[in-house]
Each structure stands twice: as C-alpha cells, then as structure tokens.
Image (cartoon, rainbow, N blue to C red; front, side, top):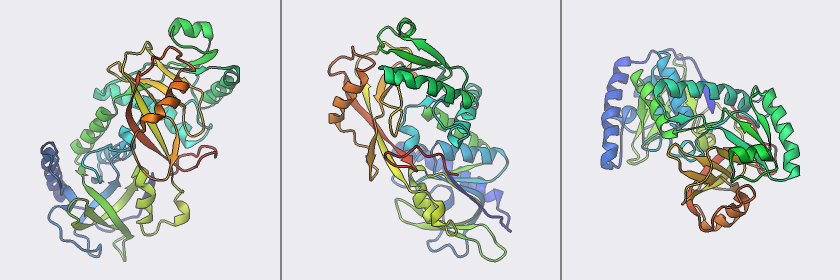
Length: 389
C-alpha cells in the first residue's frame, strides 16, 4: 500500500458525493444484468481530457477495492471524510483478495517487529471482533503445523519462539501420539497446535466493509482506472487525477486531497503514474503464483493442516471452508506475468507433498480449483520481504 497525502486549499462538495452515491448504487444494480460498462460516481457526465481544471472534487480517493482498499475506504468514511473507492473491475476483490486460503492467521512466522508480525497479530484480534459485530461468517477452527521428519521437527521450537516474540503465546507443542488423538489420519513426528487460527468468508467480509463505507456516505466507482495523478499547482494543493472508464475509454478529471494506492498487484503501476513519487521509493514487483486443488471426497480432518514453511510460501496445506469442503494449496511458482490458469499436471507434485502428512489421500481425488498471485517485494531465494507503506 502506497499512501500519498497533500493538503488541499479547496473544500469538496457533499451534495455531489451524495448524488454520486445514488448513481453508484443504481449502476451497481445493473451488474446482475451483465451491463458491459458502468460509469458510477466520478465518471458520470464528465467530458474527456486532461487533468487541468478538475471537473469534480472529493476529499479522499482510494485506488483498488481489494480487502485493503475496502477497509481503508470504510475507515475514512466512518471517520467523516468524503471517500471515492476506484476499482478497475466491476466488483470488489476480484484478484488477490478472492484468490487465497481465506485463513485468519495467528502471526506465527513473521520476523519480530516487522509490519507483517505487528499487523497480523493485531489484525487477527480486530478481524474476529469485526466478524462477530457484523455477522460475517467465520470460525476459530485451529491449525496444526506438522513436521514429517526430524529435521522439520527440530525447526518447530524456533517457530514457536518466534511466534512468542510476536505476541502469539498460545502455541502448544504436540507429540505424534497427541496429534493422532486429534486427527487420526494425520501422519507426523511432531506438531504445533495454533488454537487462534481461523477461517473467514472473504466475500462476505468485503461486502460488509463496502456496506459500512457506503452507509457512511462513501462511493464505489467500478470499471474505472487511474491514468495519471499530478500534484496540484498554486494554492490548490492535492492531486489532480485522470480517470478512465475501462470499457468506453471515456475520461474524467478529479481533484483530491488524499490519495491512497492500495492497488495490490497493480500498486507499482499506479505508483508510477503518480507525479512526485520517486521511482526509488517503489519496490520491485515479484509474482509468485499459487495453485489450489480441491478434493472431490470429504476429508477426515476438522482443523487446518500446514507443513513447515517453504521458500516463497507456507507449503501445500489443507484448508477447510465454512461449508466443510477441503482444498489443498497453494504451491509456489515464480512467474513473470499474471495468469490464473491451473495446470492439471501440477497435481503430481501435490499428491507427493500431501502424502507426506496424509498418506491415505486417495488416487484421483484432486481436481484443479483456482490460482492466486502473491504480489511480493522479494524474489526467489531471497529472505521474505516486509510490507512497504
């Protein structure tokens, strides 16, 4: 997430925001009828052209309606600010936010003091609270982190100590016998039990964030992208944005006081379009694709099962959804471009990895499900990077 803030000398218009919000809700209703182009909120009724002489003002613009963008937009709106949430797809969470394991992580693995550690541990607490208060489906299901050989078993104590440094003090070391009592079909030589790990319906979570934003007066503008952003001139500080409708190509200009780049996989591209962001401040992007395979039979587990982490990810693990279904993944494949195809031939490596801890996995049980792309700031063979804000 790249956050840029410049003070503005002009006040925005709540009347325009309210009208835009009404138009946005009407436009979003058309999604169910397969409308090809939405001109919600900002782009409605504007002429094309550059950013000189903004056609509309709004206090805050958030770029990217993944889970981070939705959460930021909601927080800004609830605090009383005018908010426009811009998204190039037709609905929130079309990319990384909907292509993951839907796990509420405990905060076990990350370097102590890192943003990942701090935000994961505090975010876990806040996320459980949010789900309870807003009726978002979730379950504190627990996780077993399993070692399938002595080398992996020797690493568990280091993982436990790191988790403790991060404030995760509820991990319990378990012997193979204790694990067998919990999960009879699971094979390992030792494990750590994480009772605070859970699962969440990510779609319901994002819809709840969106509902909170809109209830507080925020506006969602789907099918729009940022072409460029220029710092304001003279006394009118802020950012002059040029938006483009991804379907029609029509353009509109907006002036904003606060600009938040939460574009996920496209964050570097958006940053490069913002005048005044030095290229050296933008980390290089690395892409690590992860494929998932679903099980076509009910699995004999009641908890999440994770192997010891591997380079680039957390290993091919078992996650359960709120409906009781199971899926395995993600694996790690470093790629140069965004491609969500799942190659069925990758199933061979999945069978081999899964059977190290679940040897009774039936043949022909795995079917290609979906893939996600991890946006990373470090590449293969490098230590995992921290979040960059």
